[in-house]
Image (tube, rainbow, N blue to C red):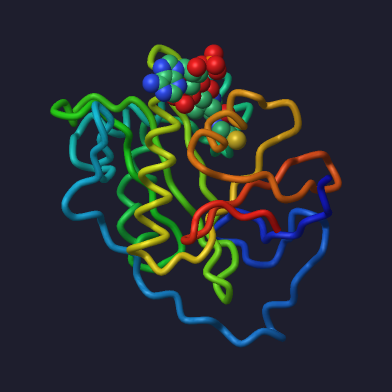
Length: 213
Ligand SMILES: CC(C)(COP(=O)(O)OP(=O)(O)OC[C@H]1O[C@@H](n2cnc3c(N)ncnc32)[C@H](O)[C@@H]1OP(=O)(O)O)[C@@H](O)C(=O)NCCC(=O)NCCS
């Protein structure tokens, strides 16, 4: 059913390491311009789920450090070694720089009308600049899981980046057996299109809707 699939590593600072072990040679590829990403306007809201930029509240680094300390978030997403509030503050301060570089964009998931309380995050890294493919990432705090918020956030965010940020395909790499996360992308209109050597399932969604290859 699945075929092997190659997509660059989702690290905005590392263009060379491939998930499947293949090493690209950046020197042999001409640099591709990456126009800045912009913030959504009007803000993205669907039902009770709203997305807003990081840094809108002084409390944001506290929320981020708390997220990095959550066992599930640390297990399934890429969190830094230094998970202190200071490191979180630096990360939040750098969001605009990453966005302006056109390499990454992250938004907070909140309740509509209550932007100061962060429920989670959804964001993307431009993993294939030539093809304009971005990899999506997301998390929710444990207390707000199980109500469909992540599915809505991923759906709204993907729709927006595909139609307003020049992204042609949104890719999600879901570790084998992470059914909760697979459920999120399935509900958000992604299709499973491939499997990496380690069992990670690759899901995609493009501007025309779901994709099958
Ligand atoms: C992955 C993660 C975001 C999923 O969170 P979640 O709350 O289960 O996902 P959703 O918000 O889409 O909610 C879906 C659940 O709410 C239920 N639900 C309730 N009302 C719903 C509604 N209106 N719409 C959709 N789902 C609804 C669904 O049935 C589903 O529950 P189930 O899994 O028991 O069937 C969360 O587990 C998490 O943050 N994990 C750690 C980080 C992580 O793994 N990130 C992904 C890395 S690949």
